[in-house]
Length: 333
Ligand SMILES: Nc1ncnc2c1ncn2[C@@H]1O[C@H](COP(=O)(O)OP(=O)(O)OP(=O)(O)O)[C@@H](O)[C@H]1O
Ligand SMILES: [Mg+2]
Image (cartoon, rainbow, N blue to C red):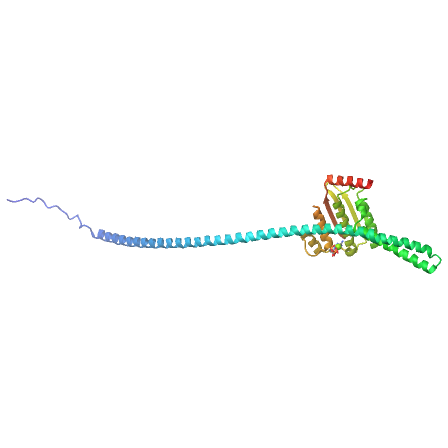
C-alpha cells in the first residue's frame, strides 16, 4: 500500500530561529543584563557598606553627643557652683556695706554728741573760770590804779582774758551752735557766715527763705554741718573771694545750695564723689553720709566758674510742723 504524502510545503521564506541578527542582539542583551546585574550587586554591596558606615557614624555621633551632654552637665554644675559662690560674695559685700553705712552713721551721731558735749563743757567750765578771772582782774585793776606800770599789766591781762573768753565762746558755738536749738537754722547760719567772713575775708551772700519752717533737729544739724564743711572747703581749696548760700523749703523738704567762684573742683574728685572713689576726704565723705542718713541726696558739680554743692533733704510736713511747735514751746519757756 502506498501512502500519499501530499505536496511538500515551501519553507524557504522561514529563516532559522533565532536568526543571526536576533542572536546578536540577544547576546548583547544578555551581556547587558549581566553587566546590570554586576552593577546592581556592586551597588548593593556599596549600599551595604554605606549602611554600615552610616551606622558607625551614627554610633560615633551618639557617643559624641553623650560626651557633650556630660561636659554640659559638668560645666553647668561648675557654673551653678560659681554662681552660688558669687551670690554669697555679693551678699557678704552688701552686708559689709550696710554695716559700714551703719557704722559711719553711728560715728557721725557720736561726733555730733561729742561736739555738743565739748562745746557745753568749754562754755561751762573754761568759759566760767575765765569769766571769774576777768572779774578778779577788774578788782585788781581798781586796787592798782595808783601804780601805772602794774595797772597797765592788769589792763593787758584783762584784754587777754577777754580775747580768750571770746575765742572759747566761738569755739564752743562752732562745736555746737546754741542758737541752732533756740533761734533756729537761719539765725545759726547767719551767725556762722558772719564769723566765717570776718576770719576768712570771703564775702558770704545768704539767701534764706524768710518763711523757712523749723525742720527736725537732725535735718537742721545736717544742714549746718554741710554749710560749715562747704565754706571751709571754699576757703581751703577754691581761692574764691565770694560764696553764695541759698536755703529754701519745697514740697519735699529742704533745698540747700552753696556756690563759689573759685578754681573749680578737680575732675578726679568729682568722679570719686559719684563712684565712692578714694579722692575725697572726710569732709565730702561726711557730707554725703549725713545726707544719705536722712534719705537725702547731695550733688557736687562744676559751676563754671567755681563749684556748686546742692543738697536735698526730704522732710515730712508733719515732722516739720511738730518741730515748729516744739521750738515755739521751747522759746516761750
Ligand atoms: N569748693 C571747692 N573748690 C575746689 N576744690 C574743692 C572744693 N571743695 C572740695 N574740693 C576738692 O575736693 C577735695 C576733697 O574735699 P574734702 O572736703 O572731702 O577733703 P579735704 O577738704 O581735702 O579734707 P577734710 O577731710 O579735712 O575735709 C579737696 O581736697 C579739694 O581738692
Ligand atoms: Mg574739707
